[in-house]
Structures are given as structure tokens and as C-alpha cells.
Image 1 (cartoon, rainbow, N blue to C red):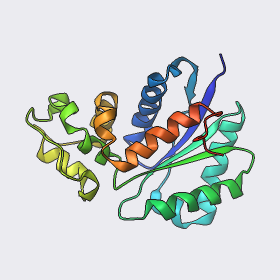
Image 2: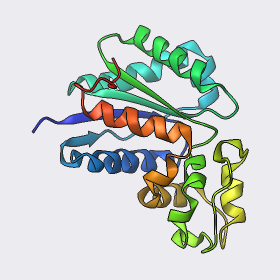
Image 3: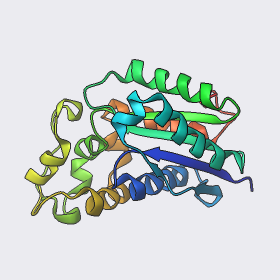
Image 4: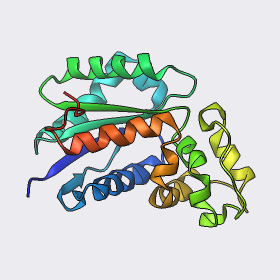
Length: 203
């Protein structure tokens, strides 16, 4: 069985654990979890990564070197906040390829935050880590500024990224979360990454 290796670049403390959990869950949906290997994510400062060319090159080079050892790919997963995913994503991909053209890159941007995906799937998380049993998703999860605060307001306690992000990642319903367009795109593109012969696979 061929091994798929992914070297992630992330920005949040919670995503260091949550992103590998997400990748394994997605691989499991297409029967490839046993062939997936995920390097410990490299955590970057988003502002520096987006605006400092030397900083960007340093961390992309590091991740690419790890991926290249096993013919793997680099996943760059960031929060988009108020930025435009349609312009930022292609720009990051172009710059990453300019750093290391022999490695496959995939850029995934969560609109506005990674936690926005949980908001879209709130019903599937009822009762998980103190989320209230009557919690319904907002009408538009991408319109919420402050998804972490929204979660806190619907929990018996305070949402903590390091504690709760990986817990919610392991439990949130993918089909519900696909109501958030950025998660729908992420799901489709990561699945395609696991199948290099797919027409949707990055190149």
C-alpha cells in the first residue's frame, strides 16, 4: 500500500493537534487512513507568514524538505479572517511553488476561522465538551466574527483552542459542516490530495 505523507503548516496552537486529526478523519472517509502519515505540523505566525517574504520562505522550505523525503505534500492551512479566499489562496500557492517547485502544495483557507466549521456543524456537536444540547448553527457561519466567542456563548464553560479544537475536530459532522463553503472546498481538495489521479487533485 502506497503511503501518503503530508507536512502541514498551521497558525494556531490548537491546530497542531486538530489538523492531523482532521486529515486522518478525511482519509478514513475514503478508506485511506491506514496509508496516511502526517508530520507534526509546523506552526507559524500568520502575520509574518503572509507579509514577510523571508519568513515565508524559511517555513515553506522546512515543510517542503520534510515532505520531499517521502514524496509527500505540504498542506498550508490558515484562517482567512476578513481576507478574500479567492485571491489569497492562489497567491500563497504561487509563492510556495516558487520556493520549492518539486513539491506538491495544497492551500486551505478557513473563512473566517477554523472554528467557523464547527459553527456550521453545531447540531452534530451538541453535548460535546460542554456545548449546550439545544445549540443550533447560525444562519451563516461565515458571517460570524469571533467563532471562538460564539462557541463560548453556547457552552457550559469557555472555549479553549488548545483543549477543545481537537475534541470538536474528532466529532463534528462533515455533511453539516459542508454548509460552510470553505469547509466544503477543503474537504473536496484534501480528498483529492489523497488520490493524485483525481481530476480535482492539486498540481
